[in-house]
Image (cartoon, rainbow, N blue to C red; front, side, top):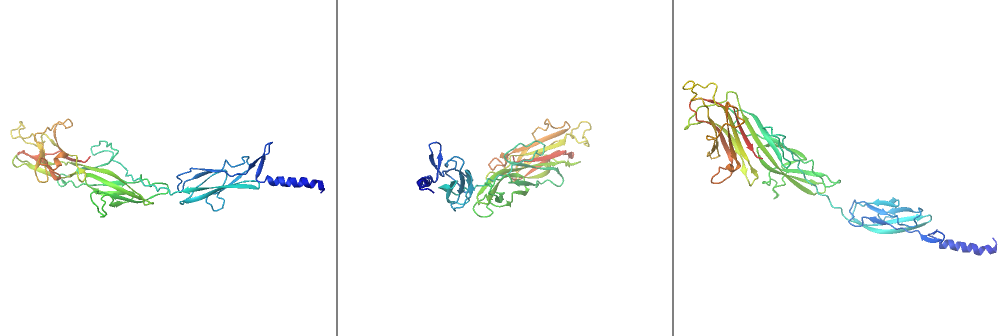
Length: 398
């Protein structure tokens, strides 16, 4: 190389060295350094498992020459590539996040520290599925969206041998609408407490006993009454929740039989057919009957009746009544003065109804209390046996 070219070569080498890490732009040959710049979102309240967006779009130069690599956890290894990425962390801590941009042989990095906090553990939401029977025992539709309302329809009671109300039914309980508290949670325990006044496990809490366990259970042999039950659930994180619901079980009993008769009696010595009726009215327990109804239907004149004076019917006009007695055998109600010709009654029959509202069963000086009551079909007619068409007893708990 000739000597007069050597100064020019030296000058070019020195100029290239001075432009290291820079890009020449435009006619003015403005220098733009390779610079890593990133932002992230959200900036606060970052919890374990949260996805954080890392955006390196403000890095320089912005001429499409840059490549982007991300170290999300400070271990000097590339976890993500691309101008905009997202990272998440499963444990609490401080994480040094580094963006490195490269253009040709030049590179630059920026590091920021992201604080990750413990994610809140979701609490479960216990929920008992509400439902009712579609209809009551008289085929009236039941419209209720708050409670479980069920009926015992005993439509084939035998007058001669089955005059005690001991009927029960099973109650299905379902908790499948319960929420676990998050996608990562699941329910580990379902406990059903069927009596909120009894602490059967002795832990001091009367509402968390495990009388039944499971997501869907069957409560067997439930007698007529008003009940409040509680569902307790626990999720996989140990969080708990509860839900209560009222369960109402009412009763309808129908007695009828061909040639069912009641013997003759007198005012001083009436003939009676007794029906035992358990009634519960206990405000402290939350089990309070609403009313008791008894409906008696009998023919006005029996087909086989023989007049004392033929043709006059002076002894053939039937008259039966309903009498109600409390547990102490005190007479609480009778129908001797009541009408027996409601609109729905057939012309050939008498239909008499006795209704005992809830106040009859309270404990005061003028009322009669709850317990085992007796309802009777009552006959004071001396001369003839009398036919009975049907007798109905209804226990309304809702």
